[in-house]
Length: 120
Image 1 (cartoon, one colour):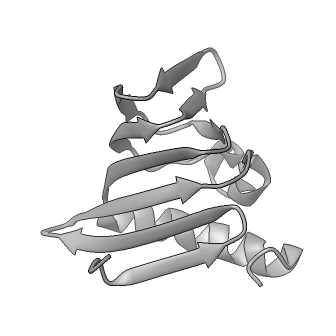
Image 2 (cartoon, rainbow, N blue to C red; image 1 turned 90 degrees about the horizontal axis):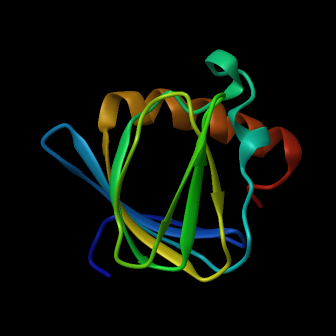
C-alpha cells in the first residue's frame, strides 16, 4: 500500500514504483480484461515492452502473432515484446518492466483510454 503511483479504474487497480530503471507494478483485475484496443498505434498494434512477473492469483494469457502462453496462480512469466494480454477476473500480478519502454507504451495506452472515455 505504500507504493507511490496508483491507478484505480474499473478494469485495473495498480500501484507502481521505479526501481533503478525498472518499474515494479502490483496490479489487480476485478473483471475480465482484453486491453488489445488500447495498444492501437504501437508497432503491430501490440505491446512492445517486455515484462517479467508472477501471477499471485487468477490467470493471464499473452498472445503473440504466432502463439499464446497462459499462466496461472504461482507461475512466473516473461512476456516478450509483441504481445497482447488477456486477463481473467480476479487476477493479480507483480510485474517488472523496463521503465523507459513502459513509459513509451503507456503514453499510447493513456491516449487511447482518453479517446475512448475509459480513463474516467
